[in-house]
Length: 183
Image (cartoon, rainbow, N blue to C red; front, side, top):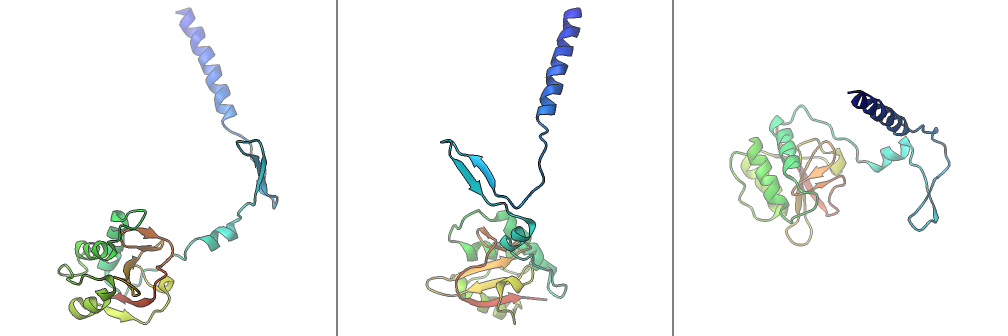
């Protein structure tokens, strides 16, 4: 037994020493660039990003419009949960499924092209085209429809950005046809 006790003390000392080594002391952030050595031994300098620059890098956080249907906010959440990191070229399919799952539409929309989504949502499901030309100004749950060559693009505004079959912090670069929502 005495050997076990001394072994425990030795392990305890080693463990305590490793905990102290794992808590480094950081110097206050200055305006100086961060300098480190890369794998080849060269010094590399990287500018530090302060809080004001971080705010410029992220998209503005969207707001919930209390006049809009709560099902649209639910659709945005469902789309966010199901979205991939990169496009699968199935934006309208994913948005349709999110709208149906959230109860924002009563049946599965029939149009094939994303750029036709706005017309169908207005005609068959009670959506209205909002007087918004800036995608960042769209409320959470709003459906943004884009035109252009091919099928177009459609996405739902969520609190951090835009989501369809993939997540993005920036809206599509295509021409915005309209922003659609319902009360």
